[in-house]
Image (cartoon, rainbow, N blue to C red; front, side, top):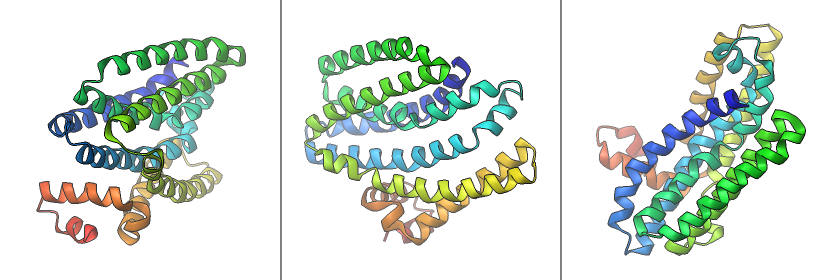
Length: 252
């Protein structure tokens, strides 16, 4: 379980730290303007979902090859918990956004008791989950991250004035993208496995297909696979990097 957790925690921590460093100063500047704070938070949530949800699905599909390349063929037992933890990647990453909102607005005590509940949840999830082996531990810890995700989201919604409907709708483009990309990746991986392709080339082919498919879908149907919030985020990036004319064209 420890190796599975490390494989999933490292990318989540990196993404979370990047998001926090970018968002915290911005949110601190608009902490007294709930409407602007809500827009910034919703765009960040949508952007996180667009990145993390498709990646979670792809990781779950190629988990056997990923473990074989990183750890070796003798670590087959790591595959199942890795697949379970892959689907909690959004919980592990997105709650960092809520954490940024909390710190920017000074809701320290509300954040503290939620972190205490999360700590207890991880302990209880691990303790109960061990009855079903390492898969049970992975599921229990993932459930604790899920509880923390919703608790921190509730705090952010209270501070920003957003509704649960707005929050959930921000995830729809990411879910749509994950569904389409995941279906294509699953078909490709199953086909490549029939040819007994070695793990590393399979991972490379999968990464190329997933990246190309995701970008193409966002280019062809931005209203569906990026949504209003994703487009808003791209407009911000286009303003920061005016040398990207194609990005400007997509967001118009």
